[in-house]
Image 1 (spheres, rainbow, N blue to C red):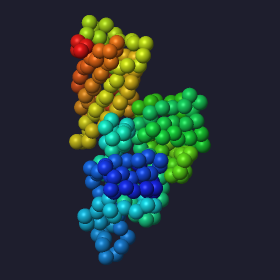
Image 2: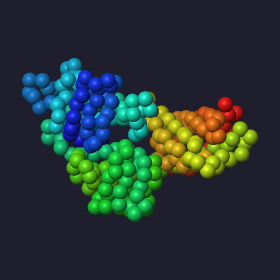
Image 3: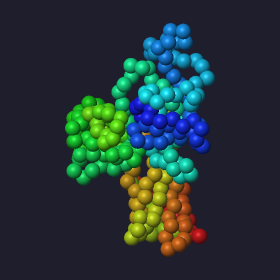
Image 4: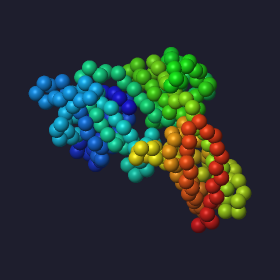
Length: 260
């Protein structure tokens, strides 16, 4: 995501910044910066000015535009916060605001989407696939990665442009109980966490259902899935690994171990 900082708290545990209405844990993030100061700059390969100092939280100021990379699109279960892996302070001339994240929800009317827990109005946005073909909101899928150009950093958020990843890699995960029968509980008591490793980076996706999951927009790479079912006061779990390849659809059956 990229937006101006609304607040900074370096003394908090963990240290945090706020932007776009989100509070983000930056305690373990790597810092990087671009400068226009002639005395502290060096041209990098892209013509930017790269800072070679010990940049920390203390160097951040409210109003600075920053680009932040996250561990996951869902909050850490312990801190309740999104967690940053990298923060880059943009050049002063970078004033565009954007979010790149998987779709968490799509309004049935096609007027808004949810990413990173944020509701974004897309009713006036241009919708494109990443091969620059016009698409409609009905073609979007939960879990699909999108790039959103925002009209403002203040709520209510709205997008002027949405670019959706094409060539979706899809999969259906069917959870089986310890007897090998498909799980289809009345309550949504089955949780899944999928991790895909791509170029040493880990993408994490979480979902909850009655027993089956539809996965979309998975990048090619090695994936693992962990499933937990809490049913009638008993917990059962299962783990599996699989390879994600581009432009494929597949089914995966995963069997739970005996409940405890």
